[in-house]
Length: 478
Image (cartoon, rainbow, N blue to C red):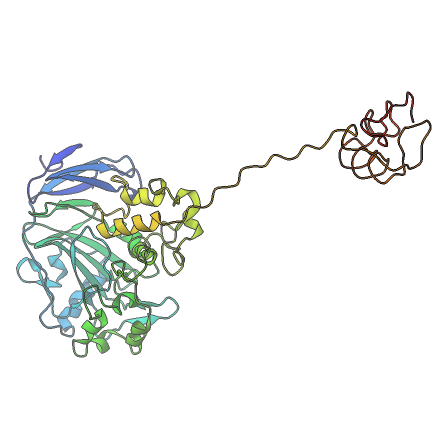
């Protein structure tokens, strides 16, 4: 297949094959152009799942092995380092070549300069099983401050954050986040190639790792990066108090303690009092922590992997999956609306459908199911209590229609009105003219109020309620 040739349908990829996707014609928002990849051996089936859009597929040879390792010694920035960082932060766009950033040197641009600070986070979000390494650069004389109103860190201009993704020994992508001189944030994704460099990705791309995994990975475009990083209050998601003050799973050392291991580093990159604020902040709950309840683990998973879009300021703010304001209880009512969760019917729950669907899977950049997330959401949603069945409707009772028979047996004597046995008007029970039960002239119960026939005192063919049984008639009774 030649460069630029249009293609649709299944395509067999050999080991190390790389596929770049370039929209030939954009018909909808970039976020909606999510692609799904069905993997069978080395075969990738590409589907457009968000809207109708055609793609050009470009092939490149798989990337060479390259491992980015932390610097052996972390040093304060030099004048040349600050100059490199300043050039990056003042440029209109980030360079097309990762090597041109000037932050990594050596063979295949895999050796970070000594002033890049490696760091870790307590809980890493799901990235299709890739390994990740993280670095931050803070310019000389600048420090990270703390905003108590939002409980988040504030980064000085010139700050650079880098996250490198690899499948074993195969580099997949490197993402760069730069706080520019104009206070904006520039974002770029770099895709590694066989020449030992990585090239900026300006449209969604899919690449494959080397054997033995031969897995496909989807690389986001800068526009897609904005959807998560620009809607959460701070564009920096990982380097935050809740991620720095707790030990990752399998470790007894927090990220802050790892930073403290480098002499003078904490004082150099944080303003006075910020380390104390970080250590005092609540630590993010770990979905993998078996000591937590299933409900908390599932909600923590959604807070980590879903709330970057599903938050009050996010592009999907119709649902709030944050632990702080949204998923604060086990069963928030918003999840029961619109069949988002159907208790007792897991496969009818929209949240479960979205998480497991092969074409419209959430999160949208992911191509593979996270085993932990699958199990947690399955167990959590399956445990929602089924509401009791509504009681069967009860038919209303039918009142007796007239004063004949059993309803209005014998009234009190009262005062007779013209003629014998025509009923009375002053009685207190059945068959009287002003009572409130059966057979009366103005009452509200059975019988009629002023009509003809049964139970009246002035109508024609009146029936006397004072008699037993059916009473008697008076030919012209009044």
